[in-house]
Length: 183
Image (cartoon, rainbow, N blue to C red; front, side, top):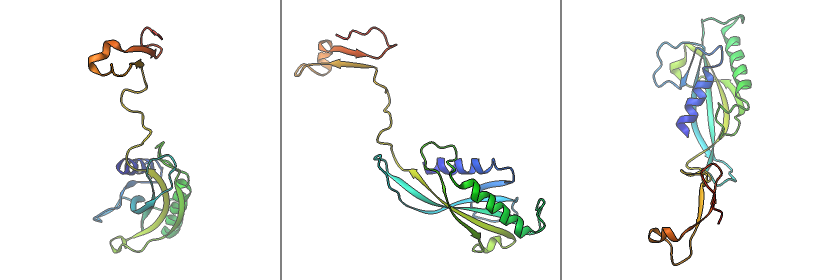
């Protein structure tokens, strides 16, 4: 699920008109195309779950990166431009599910200037933090292969198993799968 979630977030970010690049947080910083948004998941906690499937609360960061001397649309200063983009992203993230139907809506936490990564000193970086609950592992209520049920056969112990298939009686057949004996 984590890989699908990451890709869904990145694909959704790329749909925002002002985003020139969206990807995982860069391991090596070269000349960046900006404005860019980078995704990072520094950790997660166990989430509450009532449906039997383990869920985690992802602690997520989106890093809005703008050039200190680059294009700033109609905003006179790059720092204000970066704040505007971070504010826009803060609003955009609240309630987002990234097209996934099995995740809870994202919850915006906070946004602030990020000066942690010295490799990004040539850029203005804002960190927009949010949390989101996602499922982990197999869904205990997933429909198994071959479902939904097509037929129900009744046998009587001890005449059960492969050797006694002819002793079984068809008692239900779903509509559209042939004759129903109902027997």
